[in-house]
Structure formats: structure tokens, C-alpha cells
Length: 276
Length: 281
Figure 1 (cartoon, each protein chain N blue to C red):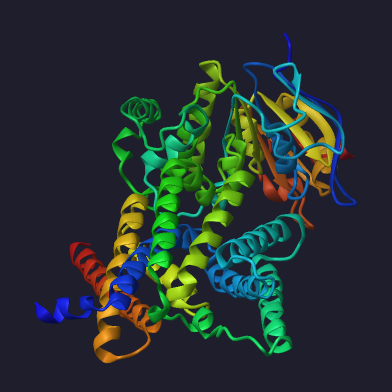
Figure 2 (cartoon, rainbow over the protein chains, first blue to last red):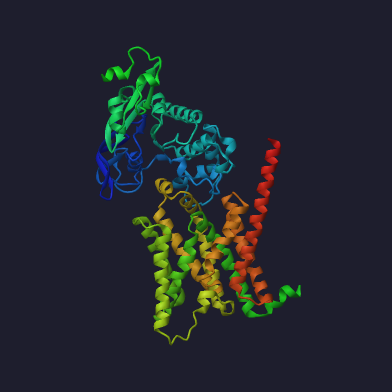
């Protein structure tokens, strides 16, 4: 299958400082993938290269089989970090979602009846249609995330790009957002997101890309989330715990061992023993 | 009734009031975008930059509106590009570019002391000097700005809300910024005559922040800000006429009073709402 997104030997830097080196990444239609890595690893920069906001210093980014030489990526929906949103800005849910249609809405400057219906349909699909006239500040974290997801989805994009969609959300809300994204992916949407929540990525995402200026590893979480790869990615001691078919990642607290963390470990799943 | 009609027997009052209403509405409209973009300081800075342009226009015997307009537009673009392409922050870029431009004006005035023209009007506003031609220029500028803002409503809204994301969604944000710089420069130039360089910033910001206090809706904020600007324009003119104080300063003081009242009312309202919530909890 032809990749939807293709990066070949891409490097990027801000001035003389290299942020990404030799990145080769293929994202196929229908894939649901997460970029994981420490702060400053270049995750958001990589998203911006794919979105066409930044241009690589070396190499090319391809989308739909065409090089992104000039301008932004077509048919891509983007959800920014909620922390970057000005919540005091006087806009309603309807206006925010309508912004997603701006490229396709011709010269008429105001929302049309047809556009209002599209907005209502997408809000309905995400279960927040009753919030259409609310101010964005008056929503819960999960509702806010859904509103921006609605804006990204309203133009029916081929690719959905989300920058840390679970940051700042409580566990339950973060879980519900990832479940929603998984559902959208099952319906055919290709999704790429960044996250710091390795356990959520392990539980919900079928594909993860570990990155720290370069790609350290990529694959299913069961294959990629191991001490060796995570230590390389985060440049710190990480431990991976497998229990009841689930996978948990934890940074090793200084001076503690696996036994301190897990009093009754499952036989054969003791990473301290493997280390020896 | 005669109190209301009496000043209208004078041409200067008719011209001045018409200009004050138009400039008030214009500044109210542009002010919404200025305030929401967090650029309140740019009105202050750019009006100083335009003063430099006005003096240069006079020295070079150019048309004031053309010379000062091009100067102001270039200053706005320069500020924008400095912010985008360097590590210099917005306030520093505005400070350096606009103050240097103002200094050009002051330097030229001190060099060519034989000036017959007084630049006091440009600095502090002069309602008596508003001619029929000035009213026409303000009217045409106001209409053009309203038409442009109408047709670029969604692009301006999205760019003001989140410029980077707007670019990702296909809006040519650099063009929107350039258009806005042009609109802002035009607004400042036509406002200079009545408000003066020193007071324009207040007329840009006060109606918009007052409107922001009163509503959470962008559309209502635009309408309220325009109305506050226009109504305080006419009210300020009356106060100025009867109390015999400078019109530009009076308009700004009327706006500041309305802002103060709005702040007080909304603060008391919020407190009452909180108390009501506490009772229910």
C-alpha cells in the first residue's frame, strides 16, 4: 500500500541547532500511531514538518505521493495542544468548529445554513451537539478536546494530527479521548499523535514511534516498549512491567529496585533479574 | 433640545462630530482585533511612527495622507517581520521601530525651524482644523475598512484566534497580517487629526476592552465596540463644546468613564453570581 505520509532522510534544525536527524517514517492509510519521546525530542517539530508549517533542512516530506514543497499539507486535520489555546477568546463552539471549513467556504464571510448543519453533524458525531452555543471556556477538558477534534474532522481529512491530545486531562477523560480516537481509526481515519503518556499509548495505540532527535525504534508497543529502547529514547532508566496482559512503563526511581515497586511480582517478569 | 442642536450651527462642530463618530466607530472596530491579538501597544507605537511620516511628508511636500500612510504601513510591516523573523519580542520591536520613526519627525522639526505649520494638531488633535475634505477622507476610509473587515471576517477571526493553526488550515496568514497592517495604518492616519498621536491608542483599546467586559461573543463584541466608539465620539464632542476642553482628550475621558462603570458593574455582577452559587452549594 502506498504511504499516506512519507519522510525520507529528513533533517531539521532551528538555526545551527539540529532538532531532527535522518528521520525516515512511513504512515499508511488507516494507521493509528503515536510519537513518543522526552520534551525537546522533536515530536512537535516532526508534526509541523508533516503539516507543512516547517520545511526540512535536508530531505523531503511526501503526502498523498506528492512532495510538500510549498505551502501547508492538504486534507489534514490538526488538533493543537489545548494549552496553546486562548480560552478567554470570545468564541463559541460553533465558531471554532466552523473555522475548520474556512478553506472550503468561498467568499461569503459568515456561517451559512449548510455550514451550520455540517457543524451540528460533526458535533453530534462526537456527542457534544448540545454545546454548540457555549463559550469554549465553559467546557470541561474532555469537551474542549472534542471541540477541537470536531474542527479538525469537519472538512473530512485523510489524516488527523494531534499534538498531545491527553495532556492536562484526568485519567478518565484522557482514556475517553483515546477510545474515541480508536473508534475514529476503526472507521478508517489515519491518525498520528504525540504523547507523553506511555501507558496510555501502550493500552490504546497499535503503533508507536520512539523519537529523540532521530527515530530510535518503531512498531507495536509490545515490541518497542522495552528497557533498552526506552532508556535510549529517554536517556534515563526506565522499567517495563507486564502484568495481566497489560504493559506499564515507569521511570526507575533513584535507588529503588523492581521489588520495591512491585512487592509480589509475577514470576518470570522481573526486569531486575533480566538485567543481571 | 436647543442644548443638543445649538453647537450644530457651527461648521467646525458639524465636521468635528461627524469625524468623531466615524473615527470612534473605526477605532472601535479595529480595536477588537488589536485587543484580542494582545497588540494594545501597537496603536500607541504606530501612531508615533506615523508622526515621523507626517513630518517627512511635509518636508518633502508630499500629500499628507499618502506620505504618512505609506510610512505607517511600512512601519507596521517592519514590526511584523521583525517579530516573525528575529528573536525580538513584539513590544521591543514596536519600541525600537516606532520611537526611531518618531525621532525622525522630531529631528526634522528641530532641523527645519522655519516650519510654518504647527504639528501640535498631529500630537494632540485639533477638532477645529477638520475640514469638509477631511470628513470625506475619514468617511471613505471608514467605509473601505468596514467592507474589508466584512469580507475577511473569517480569515481575521481565525488568524486572531490562533495564527499558527490558521496557517495550517490554509489561511494565508502573512497576507491577512499585511492587510491588517494596511487597515491599521489607514485608521491611525485618519484618526490623527481629531485625536492626536498621544490619544489614538486609548481610542483603539478602550471601546474594545469595555465591549470584552460586557460580552463573551465575538460578534457582539464587535458591534458593542463600534457603538461605544461612535457614541462616545458624539458625547465627547458635546462635553468638549460645553466644558471647553480639548475634544480628543474629552472623547478618551468619556470612554474611560464608561470603561470604569462597566468594570464596576461586571465586577459586582460576578460577585453576586458567585454568592448565588455559594448559596446553592
